[in-house]
Image 1 (cartoon, rainbow, N blue to C red):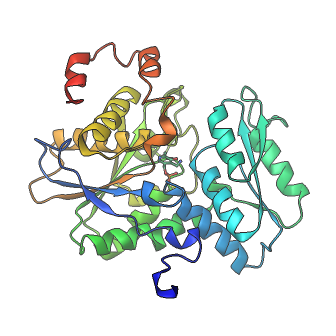
Image 2: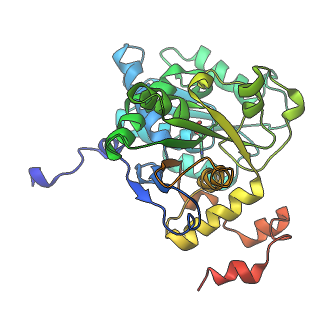
Length: 343
Ligand code: PMP
């Protein structure tokens, strides 16, 4: 029995995600395209890597001991991953989320044993009721607690420097020419790029930003332009502030993709590649397409695109025709053409 055991617990399965060749949505584009499919992590997203790394590092430094509390402010992938790691390691996981979070998401976190504080969405960050303030207060009031603070934690970059970067380098035998990754906290793109550029400084690092976010403009001007900030629908990428977990120096350039194009691309990837991907995976491949159309790649380009999470988290969004319709995302689409993909 012993030699058949593949994992001593679920955490042993974090990382070493596959590279999958993209064959259909890439038709007509110059270059070879491969997705790093992070949904193969046990918590179904790249955030398993940072949750595991940050918590292990806090243990190494003696900050965390069994029974202690881990605090974060997210209803998304990071919350799920922290909850999963907390179960195995015996910590209490406390997540402060906004009332904007869907009940599905909150239920999912509670299913993973997290204590969830739902805080009002329409208050400023420094209001004592905001989820930032609540998390900060819980952290300050709880001895031995750790605040993950993914946007401002260098260990976020470090997790990807130590795992995602070397994996991609080895999986491509060093033949990668371009990396494309969406930027939210910036941890994925920064850590992966830092490792890859150390191996070969000629590898081009291409970031993906949302319309309504400040990252691309900040990269170009080093200034935060408030006029760039407006609401957008895609979750997990783009930002209205500058996270220190983003190392802008290792990123060659950013491109913006629209909520609408990203949604359609995710649906197309699911239907043509059989890869059921999340919203930002659609954004990442849409960026690859836009870069290809700008002449960024040639026949010898080996483009690695990070697909951060799984489509099952978006059933009430991009995989709901009703939601797509409400957003007006079908207004400019020939539905017959879209349906043809359904065979
Ligand atoms: N896609 C999704 C779905 C995410 O949850 C995140 C994390 N915010 C990202 C992309 C971006 O990753 P990072 O925070 O490492 O920049």
